[in-house]
Length: 443
Image (cartoon, rainbow, N blue to C red; front, side, top):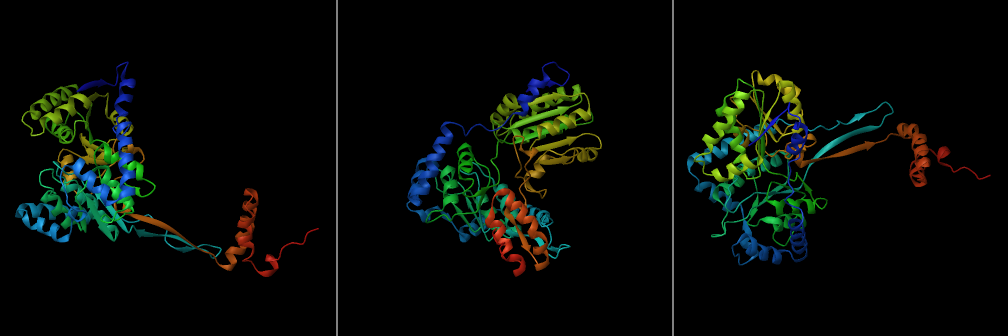
């Protein structure tokens, strides 16, 4: 792990480089390859989808219907899980739903202004959304729950999913299918990569077109999501997982190391940063990371993340730590400090904040309640976690009365004249009483 000290002469430059982390995987060849796949699926539909599934997902569907896992398949996978597995999925699903049902839309209730006009906003759910679920050798049932349940709470008519199948069998993991069953996903399509994103965006004879695509994937998935944005909406272009642990001398190095590794094991490109006020804690946490790394099933992945992208940042006090945390804008921010809750009002840029030593970030990944789909790579500066609002759109409502239109007509006419848009002015003028609508005689 690289070591940064905020009082060092080169700190500003090194900190700037650390904050500039992000995903550049989809540049160059990846972006061009994804663009070719998206265009081909748009043009040839199921034929191209089957071809790319055989080439990239590595199994051999005989026909497009083989790509579909319907409600019966999802229910069968649910029944195949052990009782403890079903209980875990149900508990997580219930907590996620309970949290997101407490969301309220920030709409303007319909009201009548002093001129008699009725104004406001209404909120409407999207009709159909598509979820990308990483698959193949991976298993992420939690990602299904964290996206599909907020969509269902939002009132989305239909939620479908795509996920690459196992290369050897052509099957999708039973946990993923069971999570679809619990979360209310109607169908899952056994296809992944840029071709799956293209199919969701443009539709094929088998895969329906959606209004929005959500969910993380590899570089090709990220590039494809960028390419189809505008045809459909997307949640975000997710970068590698990241965590920042903000700690003082009271923190346990065991806890700090565990939270760093919980994200590092996701991906060699994951970013794990310890921001601490204590030299002793920095040294102890580094040693504890090495100890906990040994024997992890994903040790090599975590080790690369920690030593290629991890960092320990020594700061001069909590005020500086809070400032730097906001500059970094992490996906996950863990507060391992005395009276951790007192820092929350001082923080504004993080995907999710985990308060105190009894709140490991992993709880947020699975069962706390808020969706774990969070902004990465510093986009927490302007982006928010996935929520019910992700799956709804607002529609403004305007209703003029005769009095309000007459009162506002001169304003419209003046602004329309300033912009040279006479038809705008006339569209108001022709609705006024006859004496005001009559055109002026030319001199």
